[in-house]
Amino acid sequence: MKLKNKIAIITGAASGFGKGIAKKFTEEGAKLIMVDINSKLLKKTSNNLFQDHFVADVSKSIDFKSLLNFAYKKHGNIDIVVNNAGITHKPKFMELVNEKEFDNVFNVNAKSVYYCGKFFVPKMKKKRKGVILNVASTAGLSPRPKLNWYNASKGWMITATKAMAIELAPYNVRVNAIAPVAGITPLLKSFMGGNTPKKKQSFLSTIPIGRFSTPQDMGNAACFLCSDEASMITGTILEVDGGRCI
Image (cartoon, rainbow, N blue to C red; front, side, top):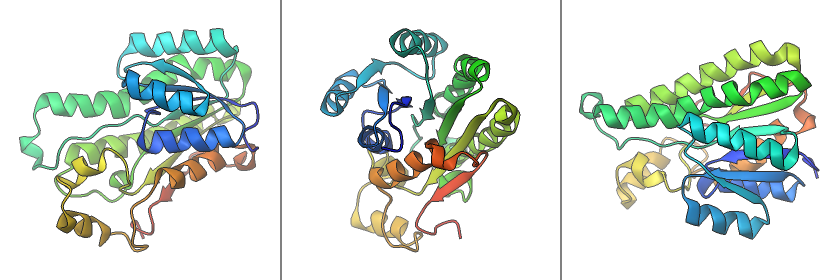
């Protein structure tokens, strides 16, 4: 029960890594507000875990502010925020990614972290306690070709994590990130540009341990970094990547 009675918000929690993190946090005793834009899937997932849910588009200021109000009205405090929600553009040469695709990627992957800082950080600073976990990617450390702007958005998140960590350390607010390699999530097909055995093998050949990451892998890593066991760890980018970034 590493997270017993901790109150946590997890974005992008209806499926994939977010669902895996939510499941692990539940097993470790946390009380959750699971957030996603997919209302039907979110309700099903949260009901299965007996946790609260809140439908929101994390790229929109009004939705994040509503989430803040809901969370503090419900619990009076938030201990942990996991910025997991993320999207990508399909693999293509950088000049072929249109402006709408670019904006969508940065609004979800980067602006959501900005909104976390804008709305939740003041509360954490005042209480002088809190944990923020950003879900980055190995793409931000070792970019893959034809995913240029997705790579850049995750590189932004890695730098943002370090910048937030150094600024918030005097307030006893810790900020870390996990950097998963391609995983068994709804985004995998988009990353690979298809779902053929050849494309899968091409991706797997870049992962020394020989398999894709799983939601359970992310849940385990996230649980550690958000627990009191990691009280001396801030500004860290934990590569959960089977050796890809070596």
